[in-house]
Length: 199
Image (cartoon, rainbow, N blue to C red; front, side, top):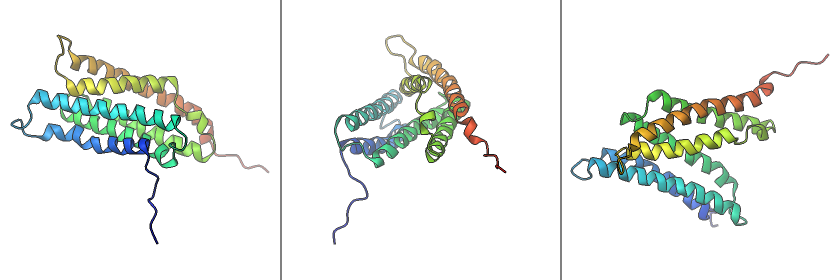
């Protein structure tokens, strides 16, 4: 009797797994000896790897929506997990490099954990529509996904202080993170109350 794979592997799923496989390299490149890869080359490599990984996120989502049968339950579960792992790993690396304040990193990572748990709980009670991605969440993601490669690159480009730009954007992302989490929690607030017993 032949065993069936635990999930169907298609192009979007392959891209998601590729994104997960890239995560160790975003951090690992900074641990290589300078005799192997110079400081600027390490910054550039980490930034490029992160941007390629981020592009696979956009591409696998497009393909899953575009082609019938490519949107799977496993893919729907794994895609946001891969995104959060990628962002969290990059933020940990940036804190270690002293390019991102620990408080900012904890706000962003903590929000991701909180909102993920909130969405799972709301889905269980059949109210997942109340905590779907909003405009603030999308803007936060844009600021965050622009800030991180800037902070990984860090070195000036044509006289532009890329590190400074990334630092401003990551603070904006953190502020939007706090507000978007507040919006989600406010929407879910009424469902936290215990139902009153009827006589």
